[in-house]
Length: 322
Image 1 (cartoon, one colour):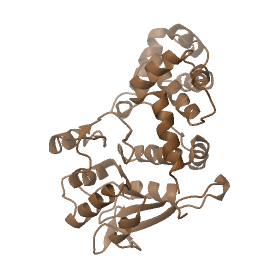
Image 2: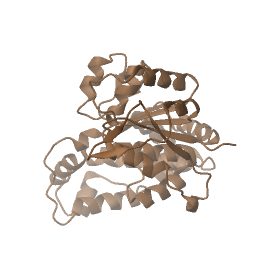
Image 3: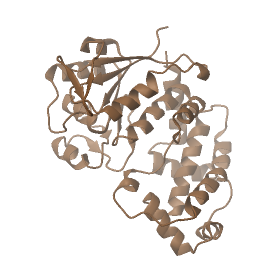
């Protein structure tokens, strides 16, 4: 069978960071992974010369017609959130959506999908600076202002810049599983999955933690999810008062320590659910929830789906990879 074709759009005044992330994820050969990796290509979103931020000139080797056979299309930002994309490009996006291609946007790239109308009635996100503008201009889109990325199955949108890496790694995890996703993240020297939302990145004074006590505590909690953790026990381990612990967690992550820990446990549960041989009771125990009931409650609250539905969706998407 043909490889899964990922096509990145290049456009005039290209956002080089978002584009570079896409190239880094999908264009490199990765023989060490032991899987049939993606085919990657770049196509021009419009005719004419393509300049990029930083004074770079880009020559896209393919015409927009390549989108007609792309399995996944990545829109790495858009040059101006207030500029209407070319009509021909929007028609191609609609056609790709109609035939079932996976459409993904990074940061302001969501405005291309929005203008094409494919996000109507769907949840979506973008950089927190653009969220209000997106919601006002396209009221039929359910804008998730705080999410790092939103996966609707066929449509995946991400927040600003670095959140694109979160989304792209999520695609790899969907397609090849947690093991491969983690190996790619290691090669990139980034976390394989970040919990929390954009609120943690809004301008706010960061906690003063000269000895790195908070980061050490976080690492320890991630490594010991099955233990019983309370505000008091966490504060004692970090050698700070409970009040200071809660303040520093809020400053650093935008949430309290218990909520942060719960989200970490949900992330662990997601990894475990991607292995069909692990029973739900084992997932609950190994993720630190203790019971299936607790797992289901928090998983639905944080991931907006059930553990069973998440596992089913993951297995279906994994089996569809060419």
